[in-house]
Image (cartoon, rainbow, N blue to C red; front, side, top):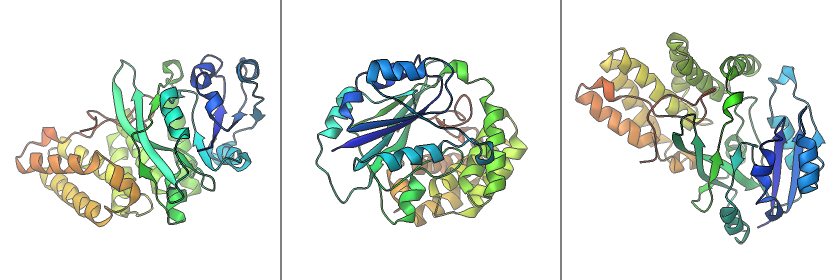
Length: 320
């Protein structure tokens, strides 16, 4: 399996070698786009890997999205498979060796794999990411871009694999101030495309992180009410956050209604390829319904998300 790697970087002189050091030679080709480094990132790439990065700029009018540059990089790759990594992510060399030894299955268009984020304090959030996919698909969205809408638009699916994992180590010294930065980006992204429900979900999650519960409630409610088949997991995530807020307020009736509606929605879209591989959602709603039927609202607590602003999402989540 020939895989081309695309990365966007800025001021990563202390991390890029750790990211690429053991795995660079396993990729069929690598394209790196530098978005304005003022440190030695470009020199490290040239000296250690013989890579001359392309230069790219992030546009305020496009909410400083990385998706445009990533897709430009994908378009230049010739390999039939593509992977996107950030400088704070790692793929173990043993895993990548295993993947490149696979035969080229023409019926598979992408792979979800474990995405393990180490939060400040050492806590690990076990989530998933679609980071390996065929040429012809790309990143969608101005903030928190992902590949799933590209596959859904063309009527194809991605599947789950445990053969490799992505390890995510957010750099703590870059975390302060990111909450407000992402809030601004999400506000502007919603202004540009108010139908992209993923933005509302992430803004609601961010507001939860920031303690702005009234604003969070509105975004979560709007996302959940949309029952979007374009963003089914985001809708279910929003339902979980909404039920958590309702339970925290002691409104067991509303929380029970939300959880029941979420389970019904889950049943209707259970065959969606991302819903199928999501290992946390349905078990959470089933446990939440049991808790609410017992009158125990304190047990209705959303789990942690690796994306949630500067320090991750809300609380309590691992694979189970």
